[in-house]
Length: 332
Image (cartoon, rainbow, N blue to C red; front, side, top):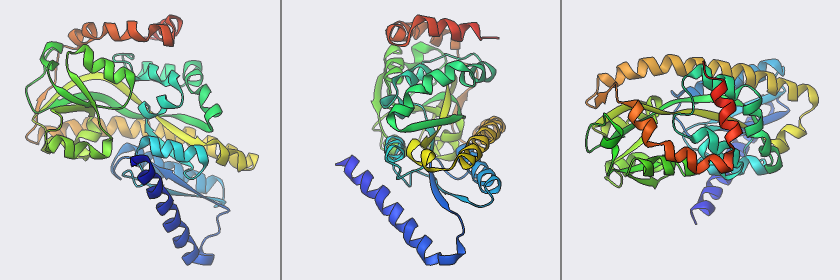
């Protein structure tokens, strides 16, 4: 029923957009009017990256392509938007990796805790052959990954207690994305993982359906989770790469010169969004320090790394030990 309602929401958005376009009549000269959706607010780095992509595509295509952006889950949750991209009702999606694992299981790799030691390490992996290999199965599902944007380092918040060590994270109900590695990560900490759609998370925290959650600082601050959470611990347990997905059906309908425009604009927008995300993260921590949430800035991350070792053993067979070794070899 939820999937049906989400589908109806997407269809209604398309109809509204279509009616608006018709009302504007001759004001539009674009040959292609394409929709880009994401789940975050208009102040989030995703949206800033989307705006840069829109600017570059419209400029480089001489107005032949117009990009309309729909933030804040207007086109449904992450899985809804990816499914929309499969059938071409949504043309682009920027979002967390977790929902993509339902379509291309190799992406589970990127959801493992403490996989990357730094942003630079992550970029070496994502922008090279490993990143290409991870995304290679998407085309068979009607999708293309144009590049990896950034959601930032994920941290833990809760309403029960400060978290300094991995032992402190035990016996909590924590919201997670619907992703096997995230679920296994929380279980490894002796806590209970509770999958909840992002759009429902604030209410779930407010009503104490869960004790806490884990997300980058941008989500925590911009979605005001600090209003309904007492403690923040900078665990940095996952570098959350963001997929920049395009409908393969849509891409294939574009002439070759406009395909090149999309590819070039996406590469530039990815680099821009990453820089914005880095700058925003530094400012957001200072902003959070001005709120009532209590921040543990130096948790014992080594205790967390030790606690989550079983998660790697769990996924080693399906992901492949050789791939782990390749990623390890790219550490600084």
